[in-house]
Image (tube, rainbow, N blue to C red):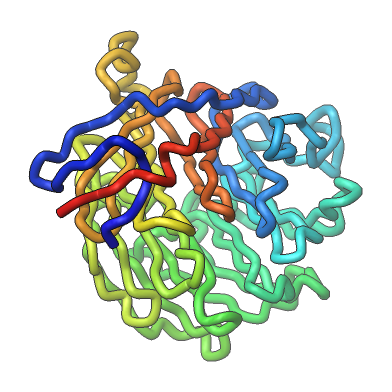
Length: 355
């Protein structure tokens, strides 16, 4: 636990200096016209997928930031394109299929290699979250509670992606909290959902029953991401914290505190680090925000809960962050419409965190 990222920097948690001088030259990707909503690496880490409020998800080469392509046509009238803000996306284990959910009341399944839409399921409200199971044979997604329609959790078989053939379907009662984030756990057996009241719930896919629930967050859960071995996950929240949980028991093990809403958080695959991204609500952003560090990516030690570094760059709140699968860098997507690819320099790998 004592080893971790930046050379020449040796300090105790009680000193907790903030180092915001990463010697990195990030690659800025500008393929979206509006705010980024979600970014995800594929398993190998050679591709990065991004979605925004501009209707067209993109895929990029992670090594140099070159855009490989987009998913959808050139305009909203193309029936194979989203016509609303794309809120969520995921790519399967083999980088074969790609999933996207949007405010146009649809979730779409795409072929990664060709960029062609394979199938589309229409919903009665906006699709807020989506994700593939570990085999890639099952896909889960949730629709919002809006316009008199309830929030619904759906699980579909990708091999028979039809709206009338759900593997699991759970309707959240009218007074129940809306699902705002989702992740698979237990291989194909369980789903963990985050809700707008701060709850985290565990669901059994076969029985369609809720098996556990915790309420450690006090406000909306904005993102959930698994650790590399799936034994833990980190959740971010508008209550200005991110929390580390045991995947099986939903026991809260660590809390990472900030002063502003946290929109996304990710666990490093190599070291005991987590990165948090967030900032003010977009409507509250001022021209002084970038100068006072409100949009920095913030690094915490996973065990000691101490912040040890910040990285500047975005000109608006960070909406999505993720370490690449090799642990050699991370990506962030912001309200400014940019995706930034960061590669750690050698100092990251020789830093010593002393108690």
